[in-house]
Image 1 (cartoon, one colour):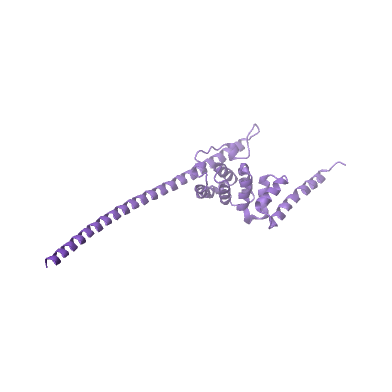
Image 2 (image 1 turned 90 degrees about the horizontal axis):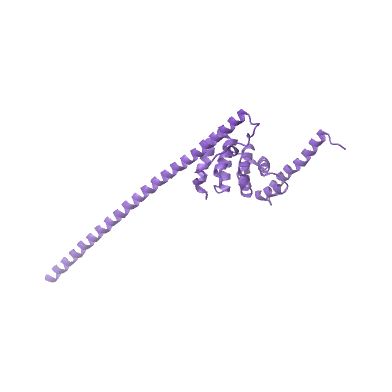
Amino acid sequence: MKKTPLASIIVSLALSFPVFADIKSDMADDSMTLVQVVQSAQQGGMAIDAIVAKMIAADPAQSSAIIASAVVLAPDMVEQIVAAAIAAGADPSAVVASALVAGDGVDADLVIAAAIAAAPSASDQIVAAAVAVLPETAAGPSAIAAALVTPSSASATGGGAGTSAQEVQDILTNIANTQAALAAVQTQLDGNNAVISGLQSDLTASTTNLSTAQSDLAAAQNALNIVNDTLAAAQAADAAAA
């Protein structure tokens, strides 16, 4: 019997609903970790971005941990994970921080680009999050030093002969926003490094001054010891003469 369009829709919903239900039930299972929930959904055939979106919808309070778990299991899909998390309502700065920590700073430029594309109005918060987190990662600030932003990493739409003028403009705008954000991150990191360098110089100068003061004190103590020895010798001579 041939399926009607309505029947097809019902079948489609019936097939998709249990997956979400399974994610919700898995997340309610205290014996399962978030990593295990992600792995279970992957084994069920779900894409990582869909998994992240449904997990955040099921428990928004665990957004950061969900993002981190997903990045650890699928580091090559970090852009999709970031975009899906922000689209699901997670705070963009928290998304960036979680993704950078989980990936240890690797692909920081892609993380920032994806976040800016998903939430351009939150660029200041995204930059601040990256500046705060990157120095603590293995990749460090150098992860964005030579970042090259391309249309594919700045926007998920556009390209090809069918691209409209507006889509092209949107892509260029996303690229410009992302490049500005990356530049801002680098500038702030450089500024922080300059401050740290200045503090280190001040500390070195203070240490040098302390060493000089200690040397002067030692010399004064030595001179005092000589005076005391001389005085003791004089007193001994006077006692002998008496």
